[in-house]
Length: 407
Image (cartoon, rainbow, N blue to C red; front, side, top):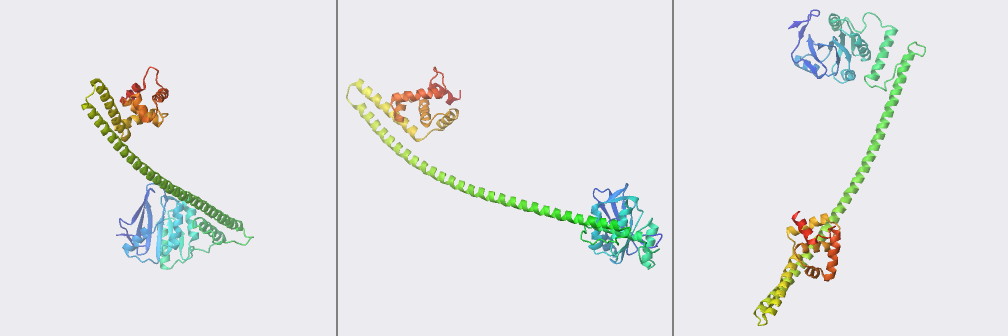
């Protein structure tokens, strides 16, 4: 175990008594001198900025060493430290008021000029129960701690009384730190008498504190206003959302009603198709019976042949009518879909006529199927010829056959 060459106290160190600051470029070490002096220093190969102040490492050292928590002394080697972050400065508030650790004396040494005023500010702002002192080197730092431990020293300035300039400087730095580091905007600012030469400096701090309080109040007002505006917008959005939900419910109800109506319509059409199919079946059976009876009649052969041809024609027409009125094949449906997509100007009757033309129905059969005269059917075919934009030499049947085969 190492021994301090000046205090002759043992120095305890362990591999885990360190903390690495992620992205900060340094490792903080903590050793124990004697049983209640903590020695902090950093390991870095270049000047660094202290980033965060945490008590976890201190707790680890005290827990593993069994050192008493009061009184505690701390010496800080500031070698290779040229700045202290704002977050670290704010952490000082925790060190002083929230850690539950009573550091009687803290001594900094090896101080770079860039950190001098920061540490002087820290020394000025601590409460009366804590003393912060700045020294040149390790020997002076440990000697100062030993003087306090032995009772030889009892204040931060043992050599002489503090003069007015030093006192005012400390008060000035403490006032700045309480505002800047600790955000203590309601802390009363010390003001010397108006005829004191330092009065303007402290009055300026007081005015700055009032400005910061006003700015903070304005900021809080703006935050509350933004919060109210956002809450209002949120309320409006919720109202719109609820209205949209109700509208969607009504749309769903309407769709359900339409679906129910369509189901009823389909059911009615299926019943009608069943009726038509039954009627056509009965009519076809009758025609077939007539044809069978004509076959055995003893009449003029030529006349009988004409009658049979007419009877079979009627029978074939009825079978086609039954097919057309009951159910379309997949090919028929595909054809009608393709035709309607290419010629959306065709109405339902023209689409039906197109299908019958494609199925090789003649003009008289189509006319009888849709309930018009042969002359009326010719007029429909003429209008369809124009709607389909066909050349005068191209027939509707040829065009529809090519469309069906994909030519």
